[in-house]
Image (cartoon, rainbow, N blue to C red; front, side, top):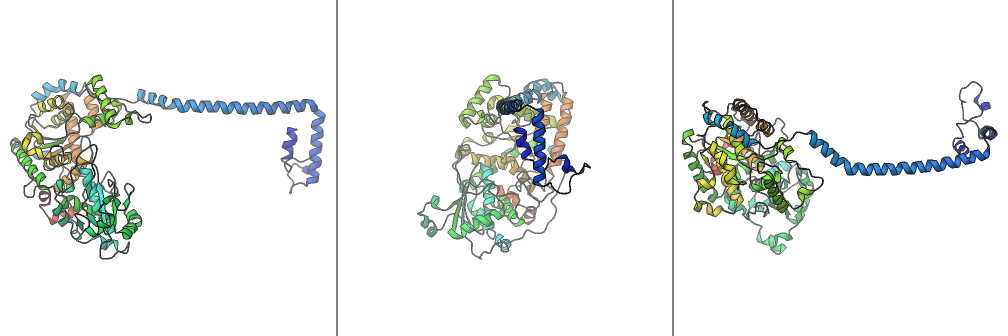
Length: 587
């Protein structure tokens, strides 16, 4: 029966011997149905003559049942196997990875004990701050910056009138430098849309907890005046316009723009809405414009960042005092000093999931802090945090002790003045002690300013960060230890001020961790490796991306060239006016 079915499904492939032609070659055309039926009947008669019909029926029935059971069994087996694989393969692969991948354990405090006698008795020549940078670079001369509005360039893309299209409202969120990025992007977007920009508002951040407004951190009048001729900026919406929305800004049409949106997105999606309503609001506004934009829009970013954004008078006044005092305390090095941006606050240590020399007590403390600050985020099954692996990957914040060992290894001696830019350090007294031991001339804004001078800034993290930013900006050497917006903006700003050279030490943390793990290394070998790291950092400090298309890592804020370099040729005192108005930066 089964064979009969198979044969009926293939009428043109089974042919009798009479239809083959006798030579073994296939026929030139398909056989007729009549001849095929005859051949099929003969084949069926042959089978019946050789195999008993009763046996044939039993065999077919048994084969069908056995085949179906086999399929069901195989499907069940496959399902069980796949389920077990999904449950176990993650944990098993993690086990294998953890057992094979190298991990690092914090031993820096032990290595410092080993090196301390060598550090104290090291009589080698101290590194002169004036000769730290072996590579020199000056900006190449370019054509003068075009003094024109963005709408002139956009006229060929979208038909716009000489009058602005409408008003743009944005809400900058994050810390000081994330807000700075949002402000620069807001000016650029206003140029794209031919819109009037309302002074950006600052969103209250649950981490920074700073209620400061734009005017508290930046000089509003200077901001508006500097952008005149590029983008029109106003402090608030006209009364007749806001009255249409019951004097409630939340009633204004609110747009959500995708992250890193290109200029064409604003022209195609946002511009028509602005034309229709005359005013739009975009919030949140962090990272809402792509880094790769037309050159005239890139220029708006540069003008905003390096000319228009000047700190407010209270910040500038105190920053000038801190800088003068830092220069006075650096008399042994000709008024030059080193600034260090140290990210070793409690929240940073907890978020990095790194462990140091605190043992089980430290682990319990950090687990509790993570649970309090981020709830169950770090307990999700798809997240895997191993402190030792994070450390070997260079993801752990450097401790004050490690920063001190690195700088002493590079040749900075205990006569070097250091300005420490940081928030409240994790276990500050305990962790700062080794750094103070290696560098007694260690200062912070708290130690340089009086309590009365700092009182108006207490509780305002962005204003305090602005003080740190200014003092770090004019240091001879800037050391970044963990990354983030603060060092990226400073690196770009220092490139702008110091003729294209970043003058920044950005350590290779993976290499550094490997050296700090090596308990057999000698002080001489450690110093040789630190000298090579300093040289490499210096070499990279003068490099700029070869590709003109800037991306998120190679941003215009970190690499201000080539669009921004002509700005300095127009105003040689630009960097001074930006922060201190008249004070010469230490060189």
